[in-house]
Image (cartoon, rainbow, N blue to C red; front, side, top):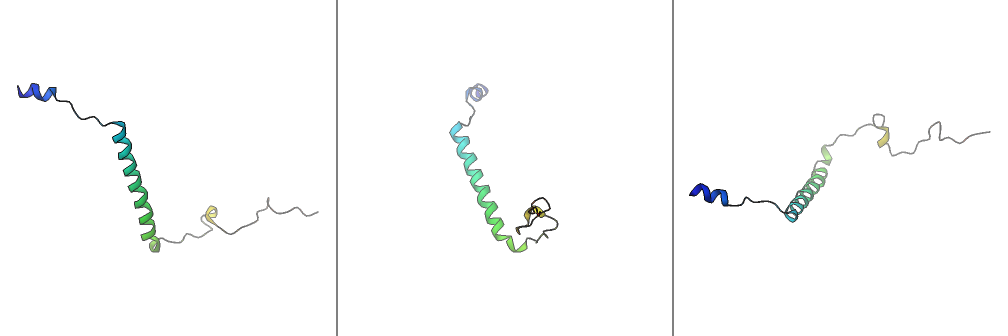
Length: 71
């Protein structure tokens, strides 16, 4: 008789509202953790030279194709 009662019980199924709320909580936690760790670990991050990462170089540079044409 106990087996019949266990089989008749419904298993829990998450609703769409529960799934979305859970996803938002996890996403919010990850964003907060990312910015908190970024702020806390900033002194320990190493400086990468601009020669290794030219796309991160903030100084304006003229390349051969960007130089004005002289006549």
